[in-house]
Image 1 (spheres, helix red, strand yellow):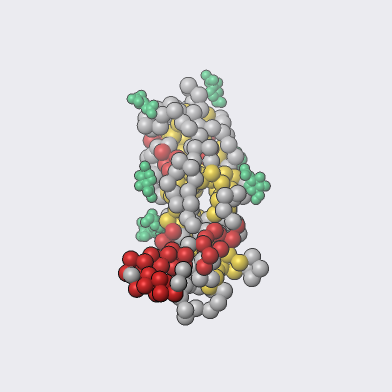
Image 2: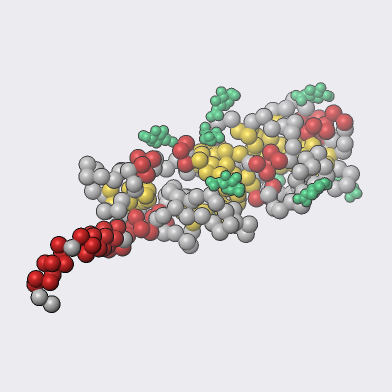
Amino acid sequence: MNIFFILRSLSSPLILSYIIIFYLLAKNTSCGVDPKFLACPPTTCANNNQSISYPFYIQGKQEPFCGNPGFGISCGPNGFPILNLSNTQYIIHQIFYENQTLRVSNTAFSVSRPNTTNSKGCLPLPLTQNLTLPSTREFDIAPNQTDIRLFYGCGSLPWLEEHKVGCFNETSSVLALYKEDKNISFVSKNCQGEVVDTIVEDGIIGGNEEALTKGFLLTWKAGNCSVCHNTGGRCGFDFVMYTFRCFCTDRVHSAKCGPDDDPG
Ligand SMILES: *[C@@H]1O[C@H](CO)[C@@H](O)[C@H](O)[C@H]1NC(C)=O
Ligand SMILES: *[C@@H]1O[C@H](CO)[C@@H](O)[C@H](O)[C@H]1NC(C)=O
Ligand SMILES: *[C@@H]1O[C@H](CO)[C@@H](O)[C@H](O)[C@H]1NC(C)=O
Ligand SMILES: *[C@@H]1O[C@H](CO)[C@@H](O)[C@H](O)[C@H]1NC(C)=O
Ligand SMILES: *[C@@H]1O[C@H](CO)[C@@H](O)[C@H](O)[C@H]1NC(C)=O
Ligand SMILES: *[C@@H]1O[C@H](CO)[C@@H](O)[C@H](O)[C@H]1NC(C)=O
Ligand SMILES: *[C@@H]1O[C@H](CO)[C@@H](O)[C@H](O)[C@H]1NC(C)=O
Ligand SMILES: *[C@@H]1O[C@H](CO)[C@@H](O)[C@H](O)[C@H]1NC(C)=O
Ligand SMILES: *[C@@H]1O[C@H](CO)[C@@H](O)[C@H](O)[C@H]1NC(C)=O
């Protein structure tokens, strides 16, 4: 190949544009891009469209540095993301990244029930342990969530119909009352079975079992990802410095992408 040929080729707009496109492709893919940025794209559980990203990460599928410690989740058999808190499993229904809130329900209330459309009908609820959630280092109960008490094995009284959330067997039912309900001690005398405490969103009694399936809201405590995300980064964690990091295409930054940020 002689030099004149090369120079002639470079002057050809077509060849030149190939060279430019090749250069841009090479820059945008693999080699130049930070490996931590590449390791942490948002993901989902199979058969579920809830996007999973910082502070959450799917254990075994993503690197722990893509999330925050304490926010590892797993994918349940039905595709739902599952959060394990204080040794109890919660189904994640929806994650609101913008205000650091998520909706969860205890898996005990969500095991594929045959038909939940008939809320006043007779549907067995499984007996389980108390389902109250202590606040953890990572999660708090959101405002406007209510403690309720479930009573199993209750006789039927007409004025208690509105509290009925399911059946224990053909002749006895499961009732739900607010924990501060003044009638609670009276109701408990009418019930022979277990007593289980749990949490629901405000304003649901009166009332149906869908409230139990719908679950309640938690807020989380972790680095605020919005500035990093809005500058094109992916949030993550540095286990050596034990702090939040912003993974950008060029390198790891401390808070956001761009030239005006400290190196990470
Ligand atoms: C996920 O799918 C459900 C049902 O198909 C739909 O209602 C919901 O809007 C979807 N969510 C997202 C974030 O796409
Ligand atoms: C939940 O997490 C704890 C440790 O935090 C672990 O011992 C337990 O096995 C987990 N449970 C499930 C069902 O994954
Ligand atoms: C996160 O930071 C953004 C921008 O500073 C702010 O608007 C937003 O309210 C913060 N989110 C939370 C949950 O604090
Ligand atoms: C966060 O936003 C969701 C959706 O807009 C809302 O339902 C929820 O109540 C909010 N969380 C808090 C703590 O306000
Ligand atoms: C629920 O029950 C109603 C009436 O009993 C029936 O029409 C409907 O098909 C059932 N739904 C499911 C999902 O089985
Ligand atoms: C739930 O807690 C209540 C009191 O807080 C207790 O009386 C009840 O036995 C507990 N139920 C279970 C199933 O642990
Ligand atoms: C809680 O409920 C009160 C009264 O209904 C309402 O004013 C407030 O905005 C609610 N807070 C949240 C975080 O939803
Ligand atoms: C239903 O449960 C109640 C409370 O445990 C019990 O007294 C009753 O015998 C049960 N009825 C049937 C038909 O199993
Ligand atoms: C307690 O029960 C009585 C019926 O005996 C009912 O009129 C009243 O509204 C109940 N109180 C509450 C707080 O539900």
